[in-house]
Length: 97
Length: 470
Image 1: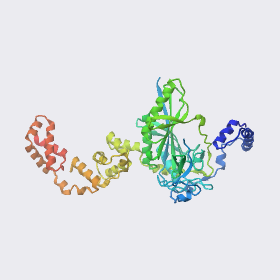
Image 2: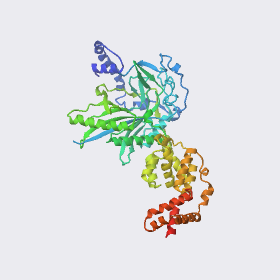
Image 3: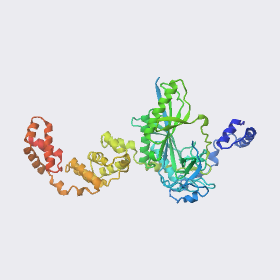
C-alpha cells in the first residue's frame, strides 16, 4: 500500500508533530512497510475481517456496570498538584485568538 | 426560483445522573473549578473508565420514547482530537454502533422528524479565555451526554423550534434531563442546506455549532437560508463549512471549512468492553416509561374533553398534569379543575420555570375538595377562584376559608328567598328583562352575589330568577 507525503503531513498535523521535508520523504516508505506488515494479519484470516471483533471481544454484563453512586472527588489542591493552578483552574496557553 | 430549506439537528442532552459517565464524581452544575474531579475524569495515566449503568438506562429510555430500535450489543469508540477541554485528547463516544437508531419525533401537524441515532458520550471541560491564557475547569468533563441526531427532515425554522421543544418536553417527561438550554444541559448543532424546488439532490450543507437557545436557532436558520440562496442566485457556490452564530449581529461566520475539517480517527475504545444489554432489561425500561407528552395531549382532548387550547397549556408541565390527575382521581371534575389551574394558579406562576416546578403550597387533596364544592354548585366559580388564590399564597386548607356552615346554609330555598328579594329590589331591571333585554338579569346576579357574599351558585340563581319572573 502506498503512502503519500500529503498523508504523512496530515497525520503529523493531527498528532501535533512537526517534521522537515527530508524526514517526510523518509517516512513515506517506512509507513508503507509498517502498513504492509500489519496487513499480513488480514491475509491470515482469509479475507473475513468483519466478524473478528465479535469473535475476539469480551463483553461486560449488565450487572457489572457501575451503579450511579457518588464517590467523593479529590480536593482541588490534589487534582491540580502537577500544575501551577490559578484560582483552582489549569492554565494553558490561550487557545483562541 | 423557489428554494426549499433542508435541515437536520444534532442535539446534545446532558443526562440527569448523579455521577459522571465513567467515574463516581458528581455531575452537579457549577461548583468551584476542578472540585468535581478525580484521576479518571482528568485523564491521569493508568486510570480506567467504568461505564455508569444509569447512563445506559437513561439513553435507552430516551431511545424508546422517540421510537428508536435499541442495539442490545453496543460498544464505545474513541474520537480523537487535541484540545484542552479534553484531558485525554480523545472523547469516549460511539461511532458505528450507537445505542439507539431509527426513531422519530412527531410534530403537531402529524409530520415525523426522523431520528437517525442516539449515542452516549462524555462531555468536555469548560474553557475560560482571559488575557494570554486559557483556564480549564474539568467539573463538566465526563458528565454524561446523549447526542440525538435527526434526519434532514426539518424544512423551516418553525419546524426546528417545534422539534426542539418536543424533544425537550419528552426528555423532561421521562426524567432523563432537565434540558436547560441556558445552563447548557441541552445544545444544538444545526445543519442547513437549500435545494431548488423539484431538485432531487441536496445542496451543500453548512453546520452552525453550539446553539443554546431556541429563538437563536430559528433566527440563525432563517439567516443562513437567505444567505445560501443569495450566494446561489449570485452564481456562487456554497462552501461546506462549520459556522458560528453571532447573537448580537444575527449573522453567521465561518469557524472552519472542509479543508481543515477534523479527522477524528475513531476506533473501538479498548478500555471498555462491549456492553450486552438483556432484552428483559429493555422491556423493563419500556414498561417503566410514563405516558408521553403527545399521548397525554391527545387523551386530554379526546377523552377528558378538555378544550385544545387549555390542554396545550397543561401538558407542557408534567407536575401540573400530575397534580390535576391526582385531583381528578379524588373525584374533582375535569372542567372546573383545569379552569381553576389555568385561570388562578397559573397567575401565581409567571415564568416557564415556575410552571415546571409547580411549587405551590396547594395539595391535590385540597384542590379536589374545593373543586367538588364548585361541581356540586355549593360554591360559585368566583369564590372558588378567590379561595384558591388565597390557598396558593397562604398554604392553608379549604376549610380555613369556606366553613361547612357557609356551604350547607346555601340550600335552594334560601337561594330562592334571596332571588325574590333581588327581583323586588330591582324593578327596572326586571322590566327591561321582560321587555327582551336579556342582559338586564346581570343586575339581579349582582344583588345575589352581594347578599350571599359570593357564595351563591350563579348558574342556579339564574335558573331560579328566570323561573320567578316568568
